[in-house]
Length: 166
Length: 106
Image (cartoon, rainbow over all chains, first blue to last red):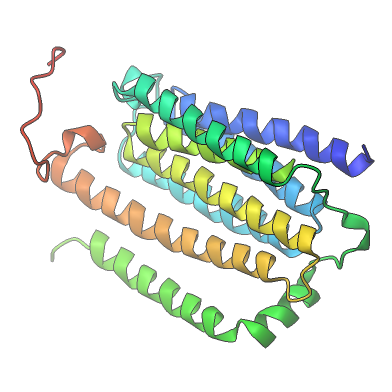
């Protein structure tokens, strides 16, 4: 157990606990704020896994943009501010069984397949802006351009969908 | 350890998608699942010591697609709210194959 393992374990516990609170919170706003905690801990996990740029992108886009967008959506749809039972549908037990089954199958599969696999982060290149940028613009230029077109299409689509009829 | 965390996070996301009734809370659970996939990509990148950093680059692409998905998803939710005055996904049954059973609480 190195220090990195301990840090990753602690961040993982925080992330998982926050994720469970996201899907069980009684307030929509609380769920969005727990989502911030979950994404923040996940950004820490990325940092431990040497993915520096991905961690900062996670902070900027997920915490900075996506969660704020969620909060805007919650307010624009006049989400009830108080605690409500209405947030969950009645198939919660079935959903719990399905979620546990998914986690169990994936977890046992991962443990069985990658037992003993150890991420040695001490001899790997740090994924900082230079490394990732070089890789992105050397090997992944076409997907990058397609992603920009996709973002433009999503932008136009969102505007068209929410435009009021004049 | 990273892969196990990712699997558990995905399970939490599955539960959230199936159990939530509010469309916005449902989108949050979808984000959890996308992040579980991202964690897998980053972990494999670090494990393979990939010189192309394909895992981290694909994690960035997943983030981009997730941002687009949230933008369009929230636009759809807002449009539905404007039409129906509700964002509860189990009340939107126009496309359902069979008539809903009579609910005991209504």
